[in-house]
Image 1 (spheres, rainbow, N blue to C red):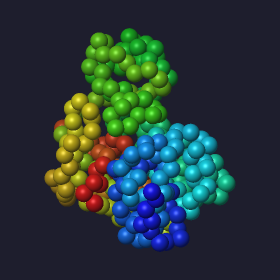
Image 2 (image 1 turned 180 degrees about the vertical axis):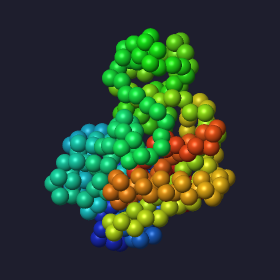
Image 3 (image 1 turned 120 degrees about the horizontal axis):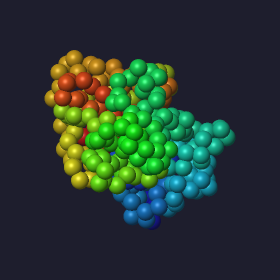
Image 4 (image 1 turned 60 degrees about the vertical axis):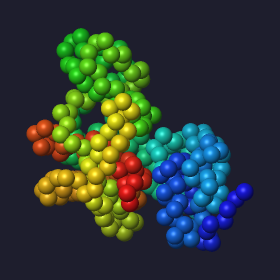
Length: 280
């Protein structure tokens, strides 16, 4: 049964109905916004409070395109979705926020890191490879040394598609990859920054995170982060610099490493509600 929780004529479409989608709907309902959710799970967390839940695969072009045509504004709460459908919707005049061109860049971890280099944003050294054979050759020629972190350029999420390679005994991931030097991490923090279509920006308070060693998922969240005012300002300035250079409207979660030398490095970003913002 469809429960009508909203009275607004505005239809907000949300791709993926996980816990973040549910939290987004809870906030949207305060503004009387009708929420339409696309998720393949018939019992997804957002189903019970969405105005309408549509079962469908968010990796399928036709499903995503058809869903996007039925709403006034389309957004998403995960990155692993059909980007071609979003780009087609934008080209056909439908409103997709954040811009799918931003998502296309962020979906590819190699392009994301190249963006940081282009805009002088501190990040760990990296090299991109087309396949595991290229990586093995680089190791043999001593261009790569252990330990290193291998990340699939596309399709990785919540610890999937990421592997810490300590030695030749650890199997490499198959596919186009990015290799990073292993950072000696002192702590991990995140800043969520919001930007509107007028270019106004605001940062949520920085948070400190701890991760499960096995799943690589956030286990503990501390707010405010236990960092100096200087580090806080630098992290906020970097988050703002990233969202402004992306010319992005919406929420951007920026994850940072603080290494053993106290250097702040951007790890990765997510253009959506994020686990580091659960407390908000």
